[in-house]
Each structure stands twice: as C-alpha cells, then as structure tokens.
Image (cartoon, rainbow, N blue to C red; front, side):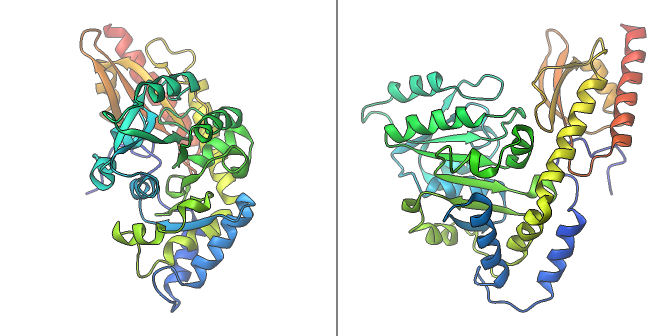
Amino acid sequence: MQDPKIIQFASDNYVGAHPEIAKIIMESMQTTELPYGNDTYSKKANLEFKKIFQSDCETFFVGTGTSSNIIALKTILKSYECVICADIAHINGAECGAFENFTGAKIFPVKSTNGKMNLDSIKEVYYSFQDSHYNKPKAISLTQSTELGTVYTCEEIKEICDFAHENKLYVHMDGARIANAAAYLKKSFKEMTVDAGVDILSFGATKNGALLAESVVIFNKKLVEDFGYIQKQSMQLFSKMRMIPAQFIAYFQNDLWLSNAQNANKMAKEIETGFLDCKYIKIINQVQTNQIFIQLPIALKNEIFKSYHFYTFSENLKDQTCTIRLVTSFNTSLIEVQKLISDFKSAEYNFSLLA
C-alpha cells in the first residue's frame, strides 16, 4: 500500500518518467530488434552521445548507477590498485561495498569540503601511499554534482585531471546528477568532461526524468578494448537492451535533459528562499543543484515526519538536532514547493510555542 505521507521530496529516484521518455520506452518495446545492444536504438543513442560530447567516445548502457560506477572503475583497476575519492562519495559509503566486492581493489577516501575534494587534499593522500605495502593509486573519482548537491567548476575538474595524468592516473566521474551540474554551471557536458580531461564517465538520466537509464561513456580509448567482457561478466548486458538507449534518445532531443534539470534546480532555490526567515530550520549546504540539506531540532523533525517522508542523514543526540535532505525533481511544481514551505513553517511555529 502506498505510503500516505508526501514522498516526492525524499529523492529524485521516487518520481516516475517524463512522458516523452515513457513514450519512447513503449515504442521500443513494440519493435523486434537484435539483442544485447545490437539494436537500432543502441546504435542511434551511441551516435547521439558522440554528438553531445563532440567526441569519438564509446557508450555502454547499463541498468543501475552502482553498476555504472563499479564497472567503469573495474576496467581501470587491478586488485592491488586503488581509487581516490571524496569521503562521502557514493562508491565509498552508499553502494554496499560493491566496489570492493567486484573489483577487489581499495578506496582511499579524501576529506571533502562542501562535498568536494580539492587538489591539495588529493595530493596528500596520493603521496602518502607510494610503496608496495599499500595499494597503488591508479584512479581518481569525482562526483558531479556531489553528494551534497555542490558542483565542481570546469577549472577545478581540469586541475584534478591534469594532476592525475601527470602521475599516470585515470579520472572517473560519477555523473548520476551531471545534468543538474551542467544546468547550474551553464556549461555543456563536453566542457565538464572531454575538455577537462575526464577519461571515463558514469552518465545517469534516471534521477532526471528517465525510468532506468544509466551508461558508461569512455573517452580514453585505452579503456574500451575489454569493456564489453567486463559488462557481460558484471551481469549488465541485457538481452532486450533497447529500452535503455531509447530513453537517452528522447532525453537528448530538444534538450529535454536541460529543461528537466533547470526545473529541479529552480525549485530547490525556491525552497532555500522560503526558509530564509526560519528560526529553527537552517539550510547548511550551498544550494547549487537539486539537493537541500536542513538542520533542525529532532522534535521538529519528528513532527514534520508525520506528514512527509525524507531521509535523516545524521542526529546529534547531545544537542537534539539532526540533518535531513530534501530533493527536487524534473516535475516538481511551484504549488508543491509552496505547500512544503507552508507545512514546514507551520510545524516550526507549533514547535516554537513549546520550545
């Protein structure tokens, strides 16, 4: 039975597919096509990726963001090697040890600031592990936009890529919410990846209006040769593959990806503005994309939770405060945002009478 609570601000994974994407899924399922990525939709989508990135890239389609990240890194790393990533990166804390299980390699986490790694912190970790007693650094993984909804500039990405390549490292980008980052920066996907020096990209559309549409985009041709074998061994080569690439065709058409991301980002800023005059509801991150992190008293959170579902990221039992996350989506409406602001403020007012 559907939870009666308001759930659409819990995650952009909760909402359905954009009508144009739902339409092309149905279209693709009514055709007869070759299996395992040899279909016309896969070929057309691959060409679309080449046009979008203005690159002779190769794109492989998979079913989940976790698989996209893990097999992208598996094609880089041997078991005695490691990837450097932010301490809050999805591969480090929210993928159930999939990286370690499937690659046999290791993660070296870097302390992040506002969700991002800086080059100095990367260098500190890199230079700390330079003998055979430790796993050998071989890759750096960036998340764009980050787990806190913040965004690396193109210059910051290039700076990290330049350091990586100078030291014979590859750069992977987790782009589960890359569209929101591009919309915020007003930059193209090419500028954030190819021009900056990214070697391999996990490109996701699921969080921005698709049903399930994830991919691995390879810019560095050295990483292409065995990828098909890794994809198959990782159980991500689907027989009726066409449903996934079909979604990307609709996603890129008429810049649907951009309008979807712009709406999500805009609605997040509306929430930020609506909470500016609150006493007990404090936004603690830079709202650049579609994620809003809020600090508030646990008692107030419990009251709001009676009507809304969201994720609690931390609780400070000593101070009786907690941090929750709200996420806007491609189809979040201004009416829904205004109701959320009104409901949260009403709960805050009632809480203040007892405080």
